[in-house]
Image 1 (cartoon, rainbow, N blue to C red):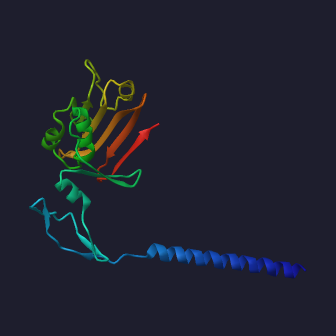
Image 2: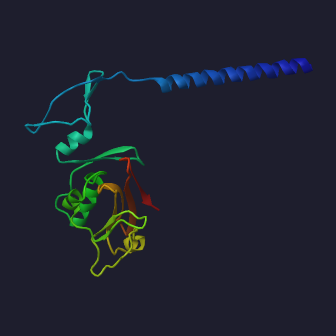
Length: 218
């Protein structure tokens, strides 16, 4: 009986191992599945005007359909395009029309401000900063923008004023960190939205590699 019990356990073990290997092989095969796509050189005409996408964009053909760079198309139409990592969503939005200056500035930060831009480009988008810190003593240069700040608002630090945002002293705050070469290296923005009777805080980040992030602050 002891021998039979051992054989039964061994069979069970072997069966379980075989099933596990089969599932692992199936998962590997699924992960290894690739799509066969082709380059599709095409010219673009948007509202009657020819547009060149530039070398950073590629048009692809897959299964008889052309796949075009959404950022290029969107921005050519005057739209803002960004990828929201936390939700895996590609967001396409018009610039706010008849609205306050702060809302437009928040939109421009999220949809127009990019890594690598120089000071002139940032000022063209957002105007002059509320405060500047020059590089030195191991610190990088930083610009701070205060959006829709209340009259008499005073703040000296180059860090986000969370208390001020929670209290409604300003609607948004942006920190632009500069590289030694004088281009945008990183951005951090916090902003508030009033939903019903509650003021909620959100963040938006743009990192040196071009990736973005953000969250609702609970």
